[in-house]
Length: 265
Length: 238
Figure 1 (tube, one colour):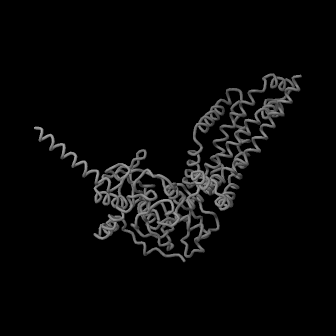
Figure 2 (cartoon, helix red, strand yellow):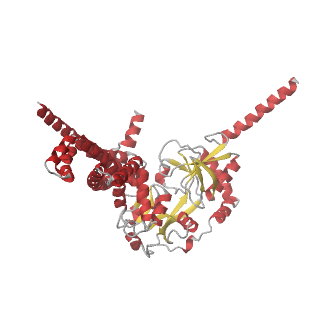
Figure 3 (cartoon, helix red, strand yellow):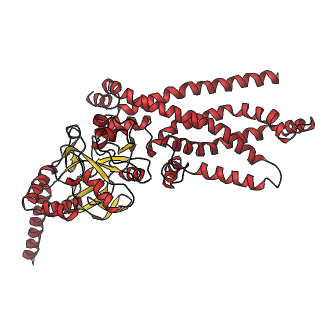
């Protein structure tokens, strides 16, 4: 009997040693759980039902990547909401990793750590129903433009486009889409895949995605600056790229044709 | 020392101050415009609502009820909700004139709706504070109801409530920053854009400084008016 107890004890000890070795390998906020944050619901990337700060039944490309990485790392998943405004503010983050179609920029890298890229993107122009399709940058300049706060789209408007009237700036993606829908804004400048998928989800609400500008952006997942998790994450992401999972997921979620959208010069 | 440096760098870096100043100032001019346009409307409309609320007689009962409903609803609704309703709701109706205004106009409408409800109560308190004998005396001189209001009651009432009116004016001035949610490029938004680009919070301090510089003279002016009135009333008492 004594021996059995001893064996049991040894087994538990060994078990917990294995468990702790594993959690030490993947440093997460809650041991054994990968806390994944999404921003504003984006069709195709991560759309979900929100209750309080908890996300239930998320679906989309970013969700599938997150799940695949977590599975490979042997972690459970927990999905939470984090607003876009403030994502790149320096300091402690409440999540392990956040997917918000965030373009990797040197400026942002000063305050957060990025994963290696998981999608390429340009800036797209989503038009309102009333707006005339711009044929050139000069045409676009004359339209009432809008963007979401802190986006590369807004950056591009301010540093490259210099429109005749100041762009309208919204806190959330949803508000920017609404502005286009109700005609308060003629041209929303936001990443091509986001606007294409939104247009596909609500075709009657907007005009077309009339143009794109080549900005050659790359999306990265966001970690707290210097997060030890990033390396393990990147390693896993590389495996998923190598075995074709990422390509398969892109095919599954993005049946869109970005090449057919005219490029503005 | 290191922590202090970090704090100063994030909230009061001279370099960011200079960099953020032009944009925030451009935005702040919109705040000033919002504030004066809304305030002018509020002062007029609120007096009208206050008078309508005080109308005597059974015939005016529906009007009184409507005005009470209005003040109750808009004093109880947070400005940010009214801003969303007006700024996104009205254009969404796609009606001819109502839906084709600029975001600035929707901002003014939202501020006016909410602040008129507050200021109505201020006026009403003023009107009720005028002793009934004043009104009775005016009527006995042959002035009709509206003449009594116009020449006797309202002038006294307004003089008494100028300090609380200015107080609400200060509130209105600060709340213009909330109009950012419907996409008006005002100071708070410019500050946020700067902060989002450079990850530095000095721009918010710049905006705050603008607001403070605008309120301080107004606050001192209010103090001055109160002191003036007090002197006058004491002199009359002696």
